[in-house]
Length: 185
Image (cartoon, rainbow, N blue to C red):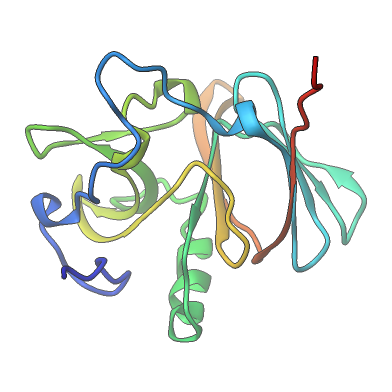
């Protein structure tokens, strides 16, 4: 049985590809906005999905509604990962050669940086990865779906003063999930 890559391991992209589970050729892929309304974190922040799968966060500490995020994914992190998660958070607005990104591995073992959930073609191939000079040096499998106990990682790309910027954020542990209800007919 193969172990998941650890956030502090250097791994080649070919070994970072999680097992395919969700994508079946010719079938529609279920996205989080299809089944999840919102989720809450351990600090009380509430993330809500829109119809395209983007999230907005009501920050509990300030009561402020944060800007819409291009993509939100979920990663597992253990106690030993807390310093690394904090370090990743410091890279959230990095524009230098080392940064944290949501990436999708491709069949040819290359990666595609994902800036928006609508760019995802294979949800089962998502990673949160540390890139250095365009190469994956650390990664962790990521899911589009919230799971209690995982941590949300979200990012958005925006223009400010004529410059394109990316903002990244690692949230607190997911503690509850509000699923959509369907009306019985």
